Image 1 (tube, rainbow, N blue to C red):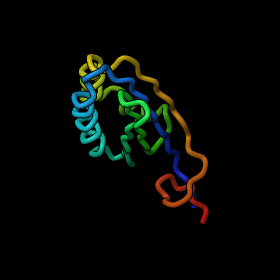
Image 2: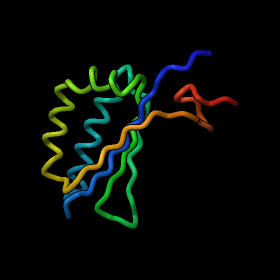
Image 3: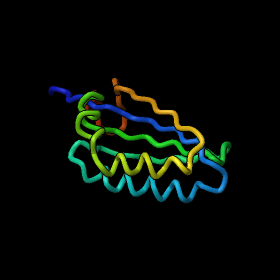
Image 4: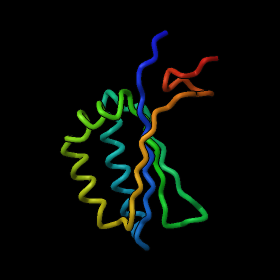
Length: 113
């Protein structure tokens, strides 16, 4: 079976004190929109109990990063989210990855079992 490319995006948000709920509203809104995209696979938002002003969320998309940038980068709702969320965040770290192995599901097409 041919495997299609997938791209994962991990975002680490350092949230300004008292702004966690407001940012979470923005995150839910963008992920509700992303979930309607044909390339979208999943998103998981994490809290970090040891660091109460931090959110981490993970997105998995069909295609390469270049394809993501070409298709998703210009979406008006994505640009609006980036602008709206700035006021709630002290720092954002973004990491792009290419999945190479999977176990437990077959969301990436890499589960060999």
